[in-house]
Image 1 (spheres, protein in one colour):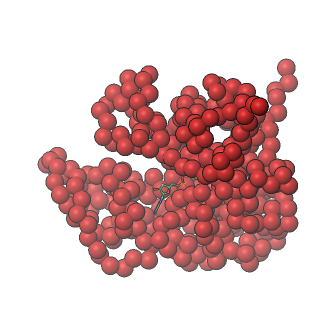
Image 2: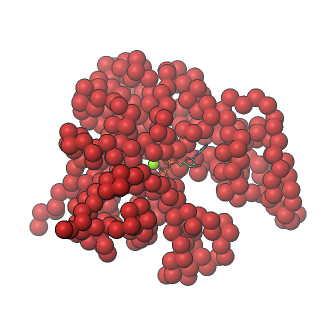
Image 3: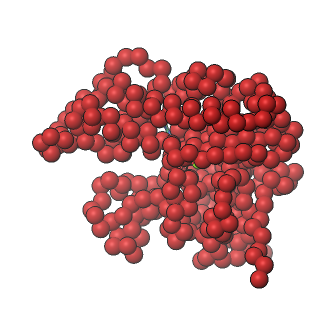
Length: 338
Ligand SMILES: Nc1ncnc2c1ncn2[C@@H]1O[C@H](COP(=O)(O)OP(=O)(O)OP(=O)(O)O)[C@@H](O)[C@H]1O
Ligand SMILES: [Mg+2]
């Protein structure tokens, strides 16, 4: 008998999440590829991330995505095939792929999803697209057909997607280029300014994980290794939680202001429903301690955190794949008329 499999795929800028229906498992790996001399793939996924900021100049280590959108089709396709194999060992005959995609996509961007899913062992796949806020809404238990207005804010690695669902569809959506990577860059930048000390984004990310807290009051210090920006020599330094959180706070404040502006542009009835219901938050950057508390006070409305965090969208895809009644939220790309 021929072996078929259905997958849910959330191509994030930092991590690629996969649902494999055959083994009913959700997996995630860094969406990173390491390429030597522009042609030889050395590693993909978590192994490639190990080389980030450590590899020599002739080895390029990065994501095929830019701000939540496909930037490099060939690399995206290569990583996808490798990680699908890792997730389920056998891709199977005529696989069915459900991709979570941004709402405001051009035809060219839609075709990019088709292109990455129609080569190599994916050649005969059937592709469905599901808008990310729709997948998030399913995971959050929002009744998409009935809601009079629900706002979902997904804060990822290089993008924040703000969307409003009402009367069975996404009525407005906006992607801004701020996410966890921008928090990391802001931390490194603040340390350079305040401590004359250069650190990489990887170290900044570690500081964010260890000290990031938008309610933090203290000045806890942490020893790190970096480069003195005056002498250019490596040295140890101490970074305080204030330096770290001040940087993160500026980024999250911008996200809060964008949400408030967006909210002001929604029709009154939708607006009222959002305020009554509270704004839903999803995405990996909402792991940041007290981000819900901070955004709630900045926007002046209650905020509800998804307990799925970065796995919210892929969890929604899993639900959609598993329940036929939800298939209506998936769509295919219409073939161009000749
Ligand atoms: N404990 C944590 N504290 C703060 N940030 C975290 C934590 N865990 C993960 N993150 C951040 O979450 C981000 C990844 O989230 P997510 O997987 O939702 O992004 P993505 O889908 O890859 O990106 P995008 O949606 O922008 O394409 C990273 O920037 C990471 O640093
Ligand atoms: Mg994402």
